[in-house]
Length: 462
Ligand code: AMP
Ligand code: ZN
Image 1 (spheres, rainbow, N blue to C red):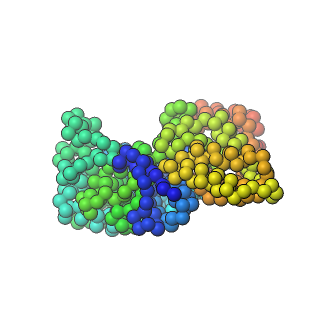
Image 2 (image 1 turned 30 degrees about the vertical axis):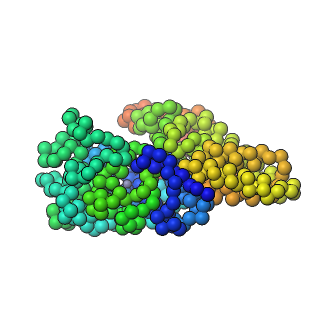
Image 3 (image 1 turned 180 degrees about the vertical axis):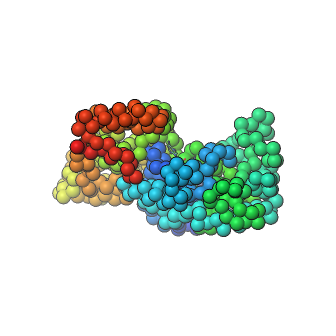
C-alpha cells in the first residue's frame, strides 16, 4: 500500500519509498543531556517511535541513528550564550561527562516506560569529534567556511539558497535581523561550525585552529553522514528545529557534499500545558516521572498523544490524561473480552479492518483515524479470538502493551499533597527558599515526606 508523509521540504504529503527499496535510513535529533527530558520532548519521541513502528509494519527494515548532544549546545539555538552542559556541570558540581551520563540514562529510562523503541544507532557527540573536524575541514576546502578570531563560521552567502526548509528570505531579513551581532561575521545568518575555546573552557579538542569545541549543528551533519551516507530517507525532530538547526544542517551538507542530506523532513508539533507554554517559572515542566507519581500508567500519555495528529499542537491537562488512562483501561478490557472468544468472524471482515488501519497509518501517521478503527474492533459485540489477534497485531504500531495489565503505582499520593509538592517545586524554581521550606513543613504535618534525590522528588508516607 502507498505510504504518504508530509514533507517540510516540499510542504506537501509526498509518496514515500526508501532510496534502497528495502531499508529505511532515518536520522533523529536526540536530546541535549544536561537536564531531564519533559513530556513535551517525549511527544516528539513518541512520534519518532510511531514512525519506526509504522515503517516496520509495512515490512521495511530500519537503519536509524539518533544523536546524544553531550557537548556544545549553547543556551540559544543561535550561537550566543553559555554552554548548557557546562552550566549544568558547574551548578551540579559534576564533570560535563558525568552530567551527560546521568541524564542519558534517565532519558532512556523514559523510553522504556513509554515503550519507545531505541534507534539502532545511538551516537554521542563527544565520541565523534574527529568526524566533525573532518566535516569542518571539508567546508573550509570547499570555500563555504571562514575563520574569525572566535570561530570558524559557515558562510550562508555561498549557497544558492539558504532557508529552503523554513522559507525565510535572507534579502528581507538582512536589515535589522534579530540575530547575534558579531563584527567579524560576513552575514548575519552565518553560524559557528567550530568554536575557539576560551582559556577556562572545560571541553575542548586540538585542531588546526587551536583548542576548539564543535558547534551544535555540525554534530548532526557529521554523524548522519557517517552512519547513513550523504543522502538518506527521513530526518525527524520537533518543529522548533526547522528554522535554525535543520536549516543549518542542510546548509552544511550542501556545502560539503552538494546534497540535501534527507529526502523527507518530518517535524512534530509542540505539546502545550493548560493551553500555554511549558515553563520553569510556572512549575509545569512535567516529566514522565510526574505522570507516574500521580498514579498514572506512562502509556496513558502515549494514548493521549494518539488523540491528535503529530503535526498538530496537543494540549496537556491532568484531566485529559485521566481520560486517556480510562481509554487505555477500556482498550485492554476490549482485548481481554475478545481473547478466547469463539464467535466465527470472516477473514474478509478482518482484512477490511486491517486495510483501514493500514490506510490511516500510511496517510502521514494519522493516529486519530487509526485509533477509531481500534475502537470499532474493541466495541464489536462478537467476541472473537481473531479480533484479539488483530488488536495485538495493531499493537506493533501502537506500542501500548494491549495484552498486559495497566501499570499502577501501589500507593497513590493524595492530590492535595501532590499539589503542595508542585507549589514547592515552583517556589524552588523561583528561588523562594523560605516558602519552599514552609511548604515542606506543611507536607510533613499532613503525614508525608518529600526528598530531592538524584532520581527526582520522592514523596513518601511517614
Ligand atoms: P532538546 O533536548 O531540547 O534538544 O529537545 C529534544 C527534542 O524535543 C527536539 O526534537 C525538540 O524539538 C523536541 N521538543 C522540545 N520541546 C517540545 C515540546 N514542548 N513539544 C514537542 N516536542 C518538543
Ligand atoms: Zn540535530
